[in-house]
Amino acid sequence: MNSHRISRRTLLKGAGVSLALPWLDAMSVGRALGAGEASTPPIRFAGLYMANGALMEAWTPKGIGRDFALSPTLEPLGSFRDEVLVLSNLWHRAANTGDGHYVKTGAWLTGTTITRTTGSNLCAGNLSADQMMARAVGNFTPLPSLELGIEPVSTGVDVNVGFTRLYGAHISWATPTAPLAKEINPQLAFDRLFRSQAARASGRLGQDQSVLDLVADDARRLQGQLGSADRQKLGEYLDSVRAVERRIAFDRRRKQAENFEDPQVRAEISRLGRAVDLYSDPARVSERHDNHSEQVRLMLDILALAFWTDSTRVGTFMFGNSVSGRNFSFLEPGLGSHHENSHHERKDEKKARYQKINRWHVAQFAYFLERLKGYREGSGTVLDNSMILFGAGMSDGNQHSPHNLPLVLAGRGGGTLSPGRHIRYEKDHPMANLHVSLMKRMGAAPAAWADSTGELAGLSDPTFGGVEAPPAA
Image (cartoon, rainbow, N blue to C red; front, side, top):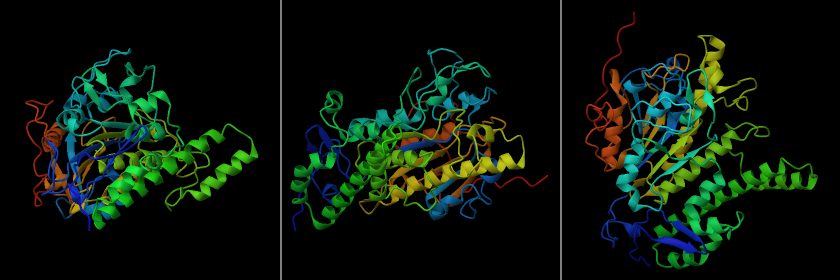
């Protein structure tokens, strides 16, 4: 059995393509490592942001510590109950200004207050926690960080609060005045990972040209150097890349066909649809009028691949911009706008619609966790070696409240987190403490951070549940 020692930074290369590899046994302890490489799988961080808050009465679990029951909104996480930490009573003091959505979005990963402006002279008051992490580990990967989203950057001024809508399109800030643009096109996000900058700029590679075909010779060479377990793992990885490519190609052709009445074009799209297992998820509904679910899952698949291949260790994903008016009638006829339903006015019908939209977001989060859990790495999985933060910058969207933010932290952080609990902190505990705790696990240790008072208690203590709920009035 062949089993050569290979560097963690080994790439499969072809014409204009560099394809990073997943963690293989040939990269483990006792193998030859490149300068600065770790002998254990790296820790990753992702922040998944949900716009418009959550209906907290349907979000918060009953019970604390390990003795808790998932709420109706969090039920899609059922198979991951022991892989998550539900965190209650965290907030951002800096977002307690009453100025709608934008201040809350700006603070989610910065902990600071954005500067009111109606122009492009933005200032978030801080760089974001994910970018502090990228500064610490970005030199070990092809991409320091990866910012993804769904909706394009909003423009103009929200006259209701006097803020430029630009603030609502960003959660990642390289500096206090420089937000990082997010990629919303699955093809371009995929190309950013696997196609060289020079090839993308020159247009030498067509979008329909598979990166796997371009690196086929290098892949065959590497297969001959690996043991049987690594060969199987590499094969599974290449199959995953191919599956994402096919789904992106179908989605692109489907969109192109929408502009044509040619029956042959539509027939070809139909054929591709049957060939690609696009609708395998039984929870999905018809995407004849809206492919939002597929676009979200493609982006999450790309982020999962980026982590598995160590293309980056830091990523963010925005399900929607601040004040997102995304219509969710693709889930249920008449469900309507996300933002409109978040202003439920305490009406039962609107609250029920709001909760269903929240639950859909949780289901996509669960999908991402499933992808990470399916990627084996060393003696565990990529999920075991990750810290995935999901949530919103406000709690009840009807009140624009920065108190008791809806937050779930998944993964084990390479053994530094002990999930499977609901932790209830004292009222108005700084979310900045969570930022500090996650940054330190990624090797970033700022001397001071927003209103942090230190690390967040109990993340690694399996017995910690926080405080009991106050008795009912």
